[in-house]
Length: 269
Image (cartoon, rainbow, N blue to C red; front, side, top):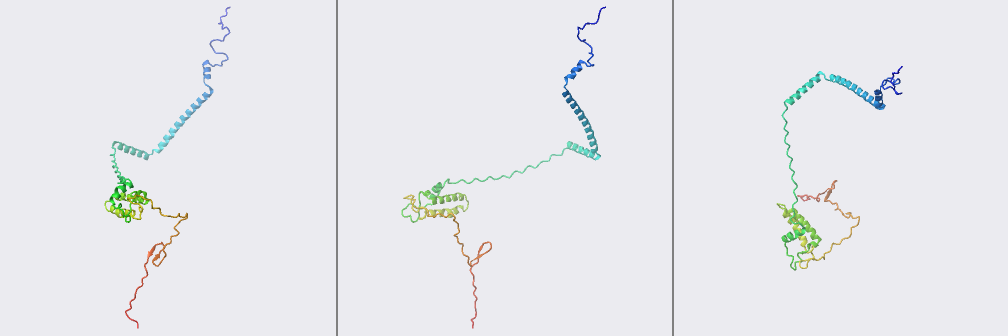
């Protein structure tokens, strides 16, 4: 009798389930091994969160709808309708634009006047070009030393420099006046200054035009003041009947006491 069973040469059958496989296919086994357990847990968490969010969104919509329904009362609906009508009218018939008034022009701030330019740039130019030409006196003849003195090198004298600088400043300040300013300059500044400088006993006492400058005039002698110097030596005028003092320190002249005469028209017996 001939055996018709195909030979497998000891190998497992090519098709069919193994008796020990428990019914699991090869594809399912490969899928189970392709997703790690950790990733599978994360996927499950994400899916749960998504489902919970969807439920919350649905519940929130229901709550919002309930709140809006309670809020939209008849009065609120009426006000909303009136507002919509008003806005529609404003859109269809806009009011004319309000013309803003033109801004007032800012007041012009006057520019500060520039200081007047000096006529003479230096005190030397002032003395040489103004003083010596305007204030002319005879100072060259011999024998005039007792009347007036002049030093051609006036700048070597401190008093002359100081007086001429003050005179120059006064001239530059007063020369722009349109009324009595120059008269004030002559009477108050120019004449007194020149009289003091040309005085025979003034700063040019030992100088002359023929002999020139002579530094014979020495400084005034002084004694050094003490460190604790004060005006404690000042003695105020004594109080007399001519003065009356008040609480504020004001002294008022009261005048001498006046004695009135009494005329007797009869002689005593």
